[in-house]
Structure formats: C-alpha cells, structure tokens
Image (cartoon, rainbow, N blue to C red):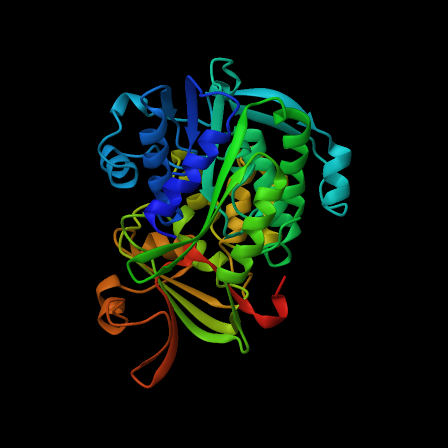
Length: 412
C-alpha cells in the first residue's frame, strides 16, 4: 500500500466523521515501533486536519524513555511544530478510571493470580476539549498481550504503573508460549474489560497497520480504521498470515541483530529472546548482536532491579517476588525477568556495545566481545533465514520486533 493509498483511506475516514474536529489528540507508538508506518499516518493526519483543528501528539511510551528531537523528526517529519508533542509520564500523568476485579483476573488466569487491576490512563484522554482521540499503531505478535496494539496502546502505552505491572506479570505467569500470536489471551481479556467498562465514553478511534519489512524496505500490508473491536480482529488475521514465520524443525543456532537506533537496552532488545524462543531447540544457542545496548532497563528503577535479580528463570523470579518488596512492587520488571530467561533450555549470548562482560554475566547471560562476534557474523553479509557461516548453518534475524518465529505446531 503506497502513500497515496494511505492518504485516501485517511481522507475517507475524516470525511466520515460526524463533524470536523476542532481538537485532536493523536496517540502513535514511539521510535521503537518505527516500522509500524505510524509516522506516515501522523504526517498525513496532520496535513488533513491542521488547517481546521488544533492537534496534540502524545507518543504512547509506556515505560520507554521519551523520544528525542531527532527521533521525532525522523519518524513524524519536520513539518509538525515541536509544541504539538506531549510526553507521557507513566508514573505521574495518569488518573484511575476504574478497577478490574480480582475475580475476573482469577478466572482468566486459570487460577494463577487473583489481584485486582487499577485502570489508569493519561489524564489528557479525559480532557473534554478533544473531539477525536486517535490511537495509532501496528498489530504484530507480542510477548505480553499475544498481539500488539488496539487498546494496549491506550491502557499500557498511555497507562499507569498498576496496569503495566499487573498485565505484564499476568502474561509472564500464564506463559509466553501460550499466548504469543493469539488474540484472546488473558492479557487481551483484561484490556477488553477495560475498554468495555471504562473507555467506551471516550471519543476513541483506532488506526491499525500490518507491515512487513525486507532489508530497508517496509511495506504496509493493510490499514484498518474504526472504533470497535472488529478493526483489531481484521488486523490480527492479516498479521497472523504475514508476521508469523513457522518452521518445520527447531533451530540449533540463531543470531539476531539489534539496530542501535532502536535498541539501547535489554528491556527492548530482549525481543530477540521473546520472539525466537518457540523456534530454538533444547540446548540450542541464541547470539544477540547488540551494538547500541548500553543499559538493562529503560527506567533507572527497573535497570537497578534487573542488575540485582538477573534473568534466572520463572521459579527463581517468583520466589524473589514473594520475598522482596522492591520486586513485588515492580511486577512489570519481574515479568521482564521471566520473559528474558530461556528457563535453562538454551544458551543466551549477548554482544553489547557498552555493557561489560562482568555486567552481562552478572545477570545470567553469556558474553561475547562485539567486535569478535561481528567479525564472524556480519549482519551486512547475512540474509534473513539460514546462512552457512564457516561450515555451520545459522538462522539470522535482522529485526526481532517484526514478527514471531515458531515451530509449525504452535500455529494459532
């Protein structure tokens, strides 16, 4: 789908509105989701609406760091004035609009958890001046929700600590392998409950994309616009056909490259683990080439917790949650520690740009010098898929954020 086609879809949507909006709030993803093509959509919407409406743009950061000026320009273009951009602070900018009852969480988690969850969203979403709020993003397999986006962009991307913590922990305890690539996961059911009971009165519209990337070229395979869940379901079906790579045999050795422009922490870079774990054989090996990785967490508190507890598997992490208030009070971090472990099933080797051998080994990973790794596994010389490197077959992934790799038996 080319730029003209996207513009035509968006123009049709604007024309379908009951009236031309005077105040618009756009909620795109941040720079880590550059391949979503949300940047193009924001630029087109700004062109269509800015002559008659005041437009605010608040990237749905979740726990990620705020976007830098250069990232804003690269993603959203240079024509949008800097004053249009708003930073979401997941610790300070949210208000509680309701509670998901513990009985519901107990039922959908199949008895694993029984806490209630506060539904917290950025206070700007409740500002009555906005005629239209547009949540924009890419539907793609996801390690927490099963499939990314739709109401996740609002409840987590523009949400607060309790929802982020407890939804992530729910997904981790339930098990990534049981939900990735699926629609109706327990976490998605939490989001659906929040939408039905606490977001239905907001002027929320959704623009969802499905994309594929080959080399430097990203193709928008579909764009879905509307207000109800059917928009998400259509995008899920397309993403499941475009973004899931099924294999007949498990992989012995996998090499993943993390673009330094998008991955500077293991919090983000561990998508290499999440998205490949269902394809790697027992006693296999995952090497992560991470030239931009310089820290563990995007947030100083989370970084400290990762350094303290490490990626040591589910039993250990759950034991630490029970015994330590710092980890119990940051369940999203605990979930991340579970997600980032192979549970002892395969070896994880990190080759980071700045973190030292001592730092990497202290959190439970193996270490390989980056220059040494790049000399053997040059990402510029490998293609996605199988490559024969010095007599050894290696499966290469140039961007783990773009899909999910699994054995055919895991097909949704």
